[in-house]
Image (cartoon, rainbow, N blue to C red; front, side, top):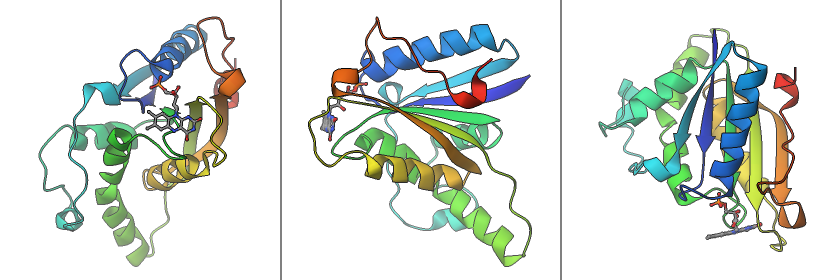
Length: 183
Ligand SMILES: Cc1cc2nc3c(=O)[nH]c(=O)nc-3n(C[C@H](O)[C@H](O)[C@H](O)COP(=O)(O)O)c2cc1C
């Protein structure tokens, strides 16, 4: 049994990201019965953002909430899918708050580097982006934010699939599956 973790970056419980993620997990579960999917939707969370206090240099965050369990789940996953709307070229603030809370992993990585230990091999990260389109500033910011935070958990972006503007995802869209998980 392998495990993939899915993040839905939208604060809306019934928006496009949630619809897409539901279809995705349904189709991938049928194609890969050996994979278990754990889904975290930002509509279910109200996480405090990082305050940069550096308490996590000692290993754990100053805030005692769901984040430690989420980090454990991510770090032990075989793959990650992020489904996120574009908010002004980046991710919604609720999702950014979660990603900033990856900071304990930064300190762990620093220890590995200091000890000149090999870094673990990279695992696949797939990004789905949804947006209304029309904003000329694209979503490079979103991609960078996701790449940067998940790199600390040893994931490397293997594919970005965008459903934007005229190509937006709807109930009648056919969903492009990640290359790494195609049957
Ligand atoms: C604050 C805010 C900023 C947004 N900025 C962008 C943007 O820069 N580019 C874009 O294509 N869509 C933008 N949108 C539109 C959303 O990305 C779009 O409605 C998306 O489908 C929402 O996803 P959801 O239904 O999963 O919440 C923005 C929406 C909001 C509320």
